[in-house]
Length: 491
Image (cartoon, rainbow, N blue to C red; front, side, top):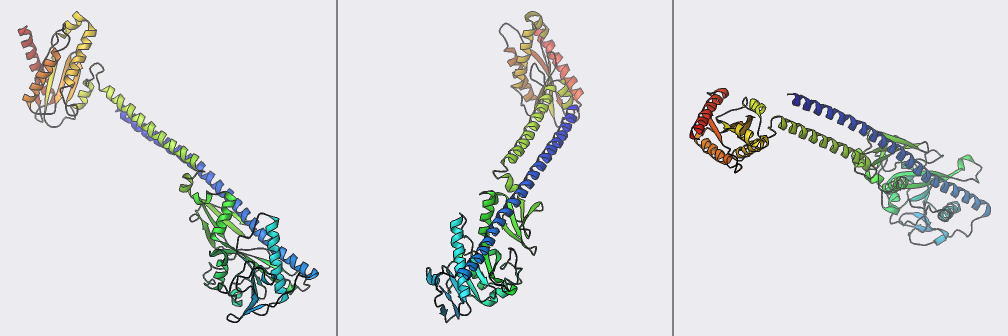
């Protein structure tokens, strides 16, 4: 009973300690993941903000170059514009396949005849694009285009044919691109807002370079710095479109390849509070936010399960696995020790048979019919006196082996009561078969050492529901003594 109590206490204590350590380590890991989400949000917001700042610098460069053209004059003269009768549009490079025609790298589409100012704006955009490419490793990767403040023309730095896109004035008005504040850059979900975004021409603007739908646009105002009238300051807006893969590339650039795919959930929140999923799954409750230019936010959370299977979470996973394996090994070792201790408690150390304590427990559990055998070695004291106690121990071990080899280990039970006395319980009601087996055991016992005479006498009794264990034991004991007297009479 003491072993059972100790075993139960151990299981409870070990489990509590395991869960305590596990919860502490889990909390540490989650705090680490929260720190990772915070670091990632700050890094991603910084990288996106830097990208937006480059766009703003580009727009400012267009304003400055336009001012220079106004003061110093543009190189070359504006040629006669093209006119497409089908669409009614005027412009330059309308077919989308006229390299550097009319002094422009891109395509200009206008609702009316192209003004010289529109041509100068387009030339300034081309010049800004060339300066940007030569000044740094950063180059134009994202779709960009210019829409005039009056909504009367659009310019693509990369040529765009009328077959793919035809400009309409209501496009700009419908999406409110010209009604935004004239300061800073902002995100504008032109295609994701169901109340305003209708599949149409603006879709094709977003798709004209990379074939992907834009998830956000950054718009920067281009000013006419030569104008003295406030209402004429704004010439138009430079639009920079970002697709889902563009934003993911910026995130990978900020965090390193593999982090986003493995465990980061990243979303961007626009100025309307609308959440735009960018990478991973839905952002979890435990998230970190970082501001983009004070206007918009990057929201990042860690997918805990994916984190544990990532390279960054390998240490946490290894610690958790070792903790679990350690708990399992410790529990198995403890149960093995308890089993060994319990086995030793009920085993006779000399013969390997069960002891009297086991018999006291087992006799209360017996059900069904059994045959009880009592066996005692003949003149065993003479062996001890003649050959010594070491020989006597070998004789008892020999008796134990003879018994063990002739009984069924799962159903029969052999017990050494003490000294040279043994009790065997056979799980059967067949007295005849038990007697035959005991005769064989008795013959095997005599085959000990050539110089040492070793033999045994036994008695047996049926044990069933109508007889008590003590009654059967007394009956078998009486038969065993009768067998001993017969043995002595035959000497």
